Length: 109
Image 1 (cartoon, rainbow, N blue to C red):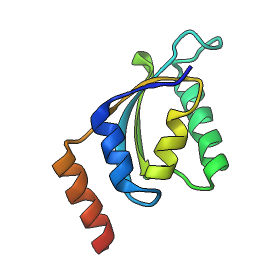
Image 2: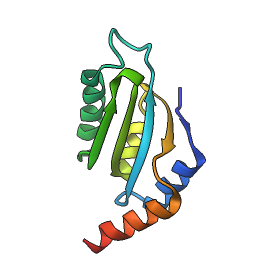
Image 3: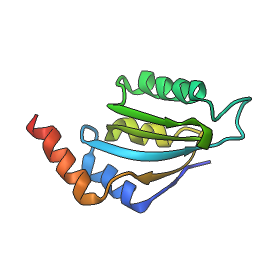
Image 4: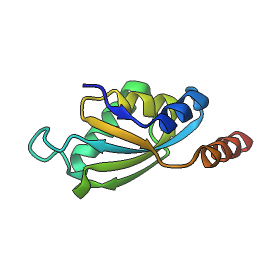
């Protein structure tokens, strides 16, 4: 089942392309497997996505008890993450102006 993705996040992903940075709040399906909300399960998911796209996220904050992970990574990484069966929904973590200034800052570095 495809994830329910916030329109603001969809727009940020379009603007970021493959290389720009995007930060997303991702809710995971807490009914999958024995301990789907555990940080170990979240790590396995993020590692699997990383191997499939050939890159790692820039930053990860795990809220395992809530079944939520906050991920900052390339647009390519985040889009691939959102296609995973474990992902229920995702929202933008930053406003569009914050996301744009973050992208501009990343390009300046």
